[in-house]
Image (cartoon, rainbow, N blue to C red; front, side, top):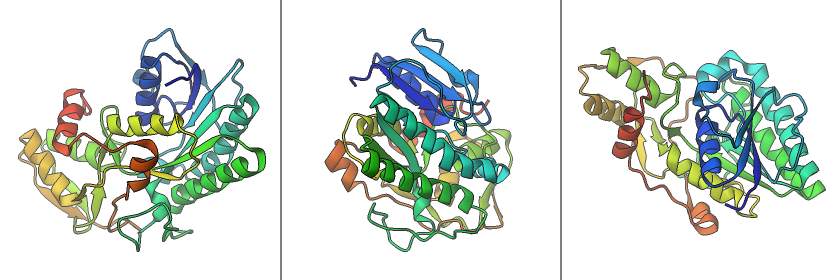
Length: 308
C-alpha cells in the first residue's frame, strides 16, 4: 500500500478494527484513536505495530511523529448509537472531521473521510449515483447522522480547495461482518442474534424496503484503494445487489436453522425505501467491486462469532 504510518480514528470500532488489521498486514504502523464509546479494545489485534491513543476526536488530535495517511472513521454509525448520542454525533461530524483534516494538513498526509449512503436520505433516484444530491429530512431524528456526514463532506471539500489537502470521500453503504455488536440495532447482527436465541425477527414496516449488503472484507479493500488513489470523490462503496429486508430475514433464518418467525413492528421514521449504489465510479477510478456473495458473507460472520 506504500503507507508507513497511518492514523485511524474510530479504529476500535467494527469497521475501524478491520481497517487497522489490513494496514498492519500491509506493513504500515498504525495509530488507533478511539474513546471506546462505541468501539471496544477487544476488537484490536495485539501487534507491535499498533499504538492506541484514547481520545475524543472532538478535541484536537495530538499524534506526535510523521503521519502519511489519516482514515477518519470515527462516528456513531448505528441507529441505536446516534439516536442515543445525537449532539455527540453532530459534533463528531463537524469537529472530529475538522481535527482529522487538520492532522492530515499538518503532516502533508492523504486523508480519507468516511461518509455514508445516508447522505442520499430516502432517495428519489435509483440506483444512487454520486451526482445525486439526496432527499434528506434535515430536522428528523435521523438527521443527526445524515447531516453530520453531509457537513463532513462539505468541510473535506473546502479543505481540499482552500488548503490543497490531499483528501478523499467515500460514501459507505450497508456493511456487515464480524465484530458488529449484537445489540447495535443494525439489521444483520440483530437478525442473527434473534435467530440464534429463537426470538422473532423484528422487521420494521412491511419489510419490502431494500438494502445492499457489502461484507466488511470487501469494504476494507475499497477503502484502502481510495486511500492509495489521488481522487477526491465522493465515491460510493457498497454492493449493488439489492435485497429486501424480508429476504435478509428469511436467509438468516435458513442459515442458522432457527425456528424463529418474522414479526412486523412499526416503521422507522425517515427509513429509506430503496437503497442501492451505482458503483461505476469505484470500478472506473479504483478498479474495485465487491466479491463476496451474501451467503458466503453470512458464513464468515457467523463462523467468526459475530453473535456470542
